Amino acid sequence: MSEFQLFIVSALILIVISSLVLTKKLDTSFHHSQRMVIAMLSGTSIGLVIGLMLGSIFQGNLFISTVLSMSAGAFVGGICNWKLGTVSFIEGLSAGFMGGMMGAMLGEMISIAESIILIRIFITLAACSLFLYPVFACMSHPDPFIPSKKWLLKPFLAFLLVVAFLMGGSWFSEDPINDQPPHPHHSS
Image 1 (cartoon, rainbow, N blue to C red):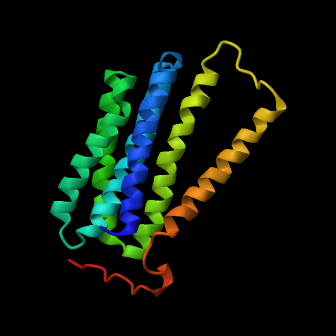
Image 2: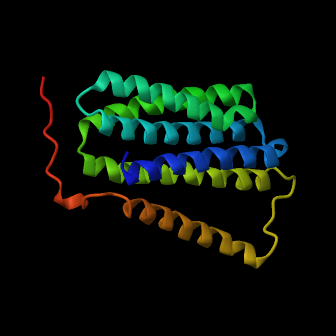
Image 3: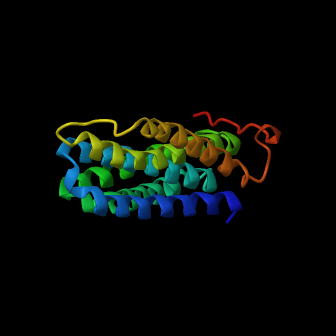
């Protein structure tokens, strides 16, 4: 397993653990629709990451990559959202299932260099889905308000975290993106 793939797996494990901790802490403050949005975004983005990674690993064998991606995406998407309730669990499970299928097909159609770029984007979306927990918890109060002007620094710090996350994944990619030959497209 390459260092970039270890980065992806460890990032997904951290996202799952963080979502379970945030759910335990903020579970009672979410409305039904907010739970569904969290489940949809996290399940789909995690499924796409897993599907792209497995589609790139098993390039040329779409059946194996699709089956593994759908199974892993559904499993991880369900785990992330099982404490949000039954409906959100099913939503996360089906979003991970669908994201895994789409990611496997996408990983089959594009080159490794292009899949690295998309994996970095989707893993960032999965990490950013964790920001929905405190945002929705704040919105659920009867009088949503900004506590102080220092609170406005939080979006800036979140932006810096996202940029660092995107750049951090590129440190582990083995080959420069522009030096890889293009992937030949299959014709039927």
